[in-house]
Image 1 (cartoon, rainbow, N blue to C red):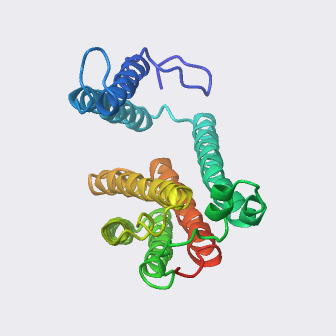
Image 2: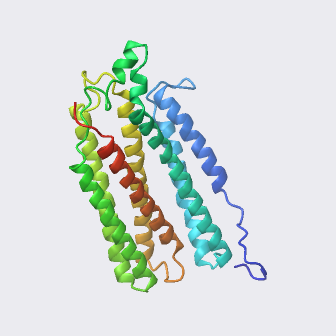
Image 3: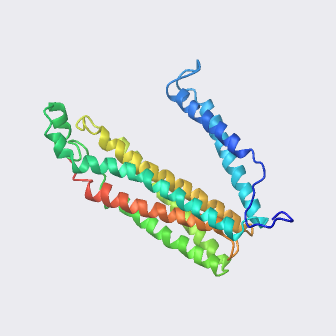
Amino acid sequence: MAEGVKHDYHLVNPSPWPLVGSLSAMVMALGGVVWMKGLFGLPAGTWWLFAAGLAGVLYTMFGWWRDVVKEANAGDHTPVVSIGLRYGMILFIASEVMFFVAWFWMFFEMALFNDVRAASSIEEVRNAWATWPPQGVETVPAWELPLVNTLILLLSGTTVTWAHHALQQGDRKGAKMGLILTVILGALFTAIQAYEYHHILSHQYFFSEEAANSGLYGSTFFMATGFHGFHVLIGTIFLLVCLIRLMRGGFTPQKHFGFEAAAWYWHFVDVVWLFLFAFIYVVFGGPAH
């Protein structure tokens, strides 16, 4: 901490990252519109503006988190500051929970109340909601690749816990091994889900001519499982950065909140997948039509 400071709080030095990050996010958002629809005289399909914004966001993430690590190494993360960091991570995970609640809500609303819509006086609506999943949709078998991915994530939850406890005990070798296994399992989950998506799209499980009313089912399936897959990817990168820091001599049994936050995030990802597997694949997946 700065010499002469008499309180437990850390006053952050002026930082460019909030401004740089905000501008980059705005450029990325506008670039997404240009890419999809065209804007500012640029035709649809112009991707470089989005790429520039994304590069700025990634640079902001790297620079900002690098500064936080430097602050921690400098001793600025006092017990009071550490409590604030923990509250921040808890609130972030709580916001992520509500994000997934929205997708579950959509899926449950359609799965549980399709019979209400099937009583509509409009023939097209009745036909669309006569069955759940919609007629013609071939659902993904829950006890094949989804089960494999469930076992992978459950195993990764044990390996990241092993790594955490090893670090707390000062066993850096065990912590490295647990983190390496967790990162490998996370990458394997992503690879299997990518293969599953390719299989769904190439065989037109949700979008065949027979499944004319499958739009909502396909949309909710891909939004819920796809966003979870994105979270797995982010969590894997999070843990990989922690592994690099650990190999470079970072973290101690007393000071390792960066890794602890990554472990919390990974357990959150595990729990969300258990709900996805149980309800979207098993309970409301339904038989193939």
